[in-house]
Each structure stands twice: as structure tokens, then as C-alpha cells.
Length: 130
Image 1 (cartoon, rainbow, N blue to C red):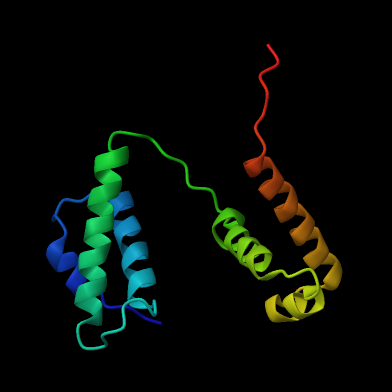
Image 2: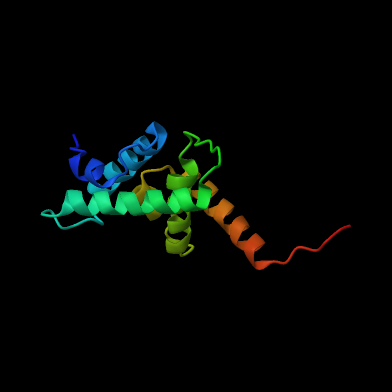
């Protein structure tokens, strides 16, 4: 979808650094295209205001830092999917989950086993060995 940035640019500081402007545009695009921003009439303005608020929070928390953003989005997309599969897993519905998430049965087993391991680690205390 092609976006008009007028609502966003109208509320951002005029001398915003290019990297922050681009980050705000990414937030704006994501929010404007998100089902979370449901009101079609004020969609662009709502997305612009949310993008500005997010930018302010990022600047307050991380301002002055040099940060590197990886292109690997696995932790943002795959991990929530894997957790959702684990939450839905009953012990008898692996094939159904594999079909629902568009993965092979083998991959579904790998995910369930990994989630089982992570759950066990969360529940068990580790002992200091110093």
C-alpha cells in the first residue's frame, strides 16, 4: 500500500534526524496498515499519533545510544507463532497445528519439543556452581 506521510510529518519536529524520520515512517506504515487501527476515517491521524508516541518512548529510553537493528525478524515473528502453537498443543493435535500454521509435521514436532524445553527451563530453578 502507498502511504501519504502528511499526517505524520505534520506532527513530527521539522529537524528530525533522517534515521529517526525513517523509523517513524516504518511505525506509521505498520500502524496504518494494522487491524488494530480500525477507524478508517481517522486512520492516518491515529497511526501518525501512535507513531509519534512510540518514537518519543524510544527516544526517551534509548536516546544517545547507537543501536543496530538486525534484519533477522525470526524473534519477532517466529517466536510468537511457536509460543501460540505450544499454547494450543493438547498432545493429540500436532497434525492439525502443522496444517494450521502451514508447516510440516516434523517441523511442528521440533517446535513443540523446543517449547517444551523452554517451559521446563522456566519452571526449574538453576543452581549456582561457583
